[in-house]
Image (cartoon, rainbow, N blue to C red):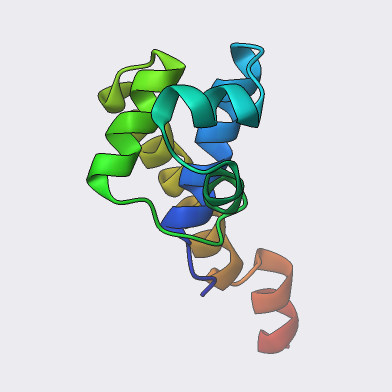
Amino acid sequence: MRMVLFRRLLGDVLRDQRMRRGMTLREVSKEARVSLGYISEIERGQKEASSELLASLCGALEVPLSDVLREVSDAVAVEEGAAALETVPRADTVVASAA
């Protein structure tokens, strides 16, 4: 079963939110008072965001934290579903092995 990485999905959602608003990393960095490099690492799923940092980023992006967490939760559910499908034997495989 494939492991779902919350930090990667969170980074994807934050990047998408930033892009939808037409903001640069520099603009978010200034608004959130967080280093540009650190935000970049969060967006790439390389660093974990604390709850305080996440609140600052959401404030800078003018998006409710609940919206970001809902998007991440939906993405986790999709990945879990895809991972579960990888472990289910395909019908043609079951038939072939029964022969």
